[in-house]
Image (spheres, rainbow, N blue to C red):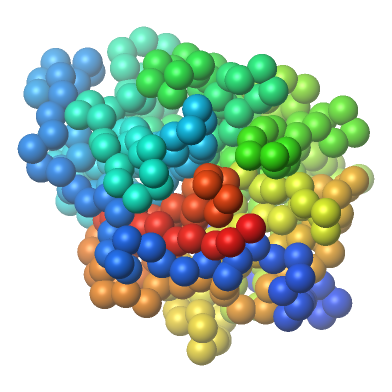
Length: 357
């Protein structure tokens, strides 16, 4: 999350019938864990040999935030965005993706080196010098992990796709869409069967909510690698989630979840000077909401929360790189019979909140 993604396009309204104060379909409520303290913080001592510059680099020096998460082999894994010491302000650092692991959901061990970062070769140009940002992760039925992430060269961002079988070694597959299409933040629809969450097929296809630079759109895929944007009858990108009142900018959160009520999408948003902030949604403060879509039609919006279900309140969530405050949700995992929700706080820390199933 950062202010580079702000759009000046006029607000799109949504009919009142879509607003919902009922909580029957929503996930949560979520309660902060770890004594209401950050789960992960910057590490100025962690260094690695950067393959682009050939120099020892403190890869997690300034900020660690915006995490993805998944449970696998009785462990909980968190992929997080880390920024080095090269920048001076939002969007000017080089980002790399680190990995943390926990066997109990409380104590996490961070690998000393990043597991995903810009490298010389075919994809250096779209990823350098801005780096690899804001991962989301799903697992396919065959066990392969699919990560969507933002490729950022400090001029243009686009969504990339990578795969892994162990969460440590990754293969790039390039942009999810045509490089000419502005894209980021892919939330692939998943389903939970028992303790395992995997990418879900609906009518034979995989679906993904993604941010197109203005609102949330919809895309489909047959293989989780190559994505086709959904279009309206007039050939324009189909809007899956219009801009709602008190929510000027929207960006998808963790992979969406197919439930008995429909498809539940957690998403992030903020108000700006064009809208009157609400009591629970101050101007320019990122908070999280939920939306419900039809199970057999991921583009049909059924309901959405009137107010954020999770927002900045702790001191470390309203100070740091993004001082207005953020609780930017990106990781959702089912582990030990509870929901684990991981979020970026103030573009500086990783936080964790828990909810019963």
